[in-house]
Every structure is written in structure tokens, then in C-alpha cells.
Length: 177
Figure 1 (cartoon, one colour):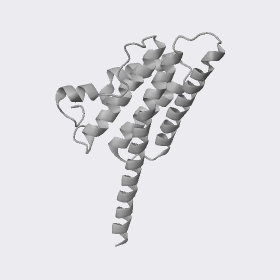
Figure 2 (spheres, one colour):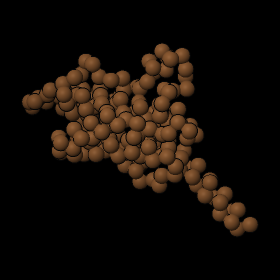
Figure 3 (tube, one colour):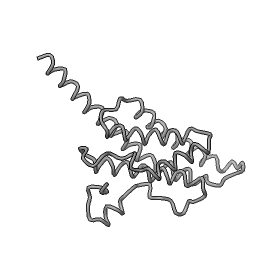
Figure 4 (cartoon, helix red, strand yellow):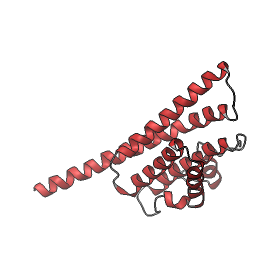
């Protein structure tokens, strides 16, 4: 009887944590368009102009919000491959946003681009399509965020994700991975 109660509480704790990390990741995703837009507004700015202070404050605030979501997601214990993948992408963003090393950013970017599959959930995992849609959205936003530094502001990846792909493929279940 005690074993059943313990197992039930573990399942309930796992469901609560899964919902928490997933909810945080959805909030994280919703913070990315503002981060990208605010950073894009400052792209190429090299001087001191008091009129630009509002843009700098907005970019700093967006960055702080996104980093807070990353920190909160990473502070939770991951149960299962879905959560581990969400945390892996949060860790990617946090590392790129906090580092002063262009070499590290380049390595992170190359890894996220060439090994995107390493961030995704296996197709047989429950909810894989939904999780992979969120993960691909975040990885597209990661590339868009890093592209700002390259001066590529007009051709940024869609920070909202795979909306066009889902519309073109005729499905609303997310991308096929």
C-alpha cells in the first residue's frame, strides 16, 4: 500500500514538473519576439545618443526576461526526454546570451544549426510533435537572435516558428520530425 502511494506521488510530481517546465518554455517562447525586435532596434548602434536610451532599456529588459525564464526552467528537475530537450534549448540560449566569447557563440550556433536533431524529442515520445514544434520555434529564434549581430536584420528567421510549414503541409499537429 505504501509503495502504491509513493508511486502515485512520483507520477503526480512528474506531471506537475512537466507542466511547469512546459509552461515556462511556452512563456520563454513568447518572450523571444520582443527580445529579437528590441535587439534588432539596436543593431549597428555604435555611439552615445540620449535618444537611444529607451531602446537600450527595452533591449536590456527583454534580455532579462528571457534569461529569467531560462534560469527558472534550468532550476527545475527534468523528468523525461521532453523536459530535457526543453532545458537543453534554454541552456543554449542562456550560454549564448551570457558569454563574452565569440568563439563559444559560433560553436553553439554551429551545433544548433548542424545538429538540430540533437535538441528534438524522438518521434515515439508522447507529445513529440508538439514539443518538437516548440523546440524548432526556439531554434529558429536562436538563429534569428544571433543573425542580428551579423547585420542580417531584414532576412531573419520567423521567430514565431513553423507556422508557414504547418500551413503548407496541411497539418496543425506541428512539423514532421
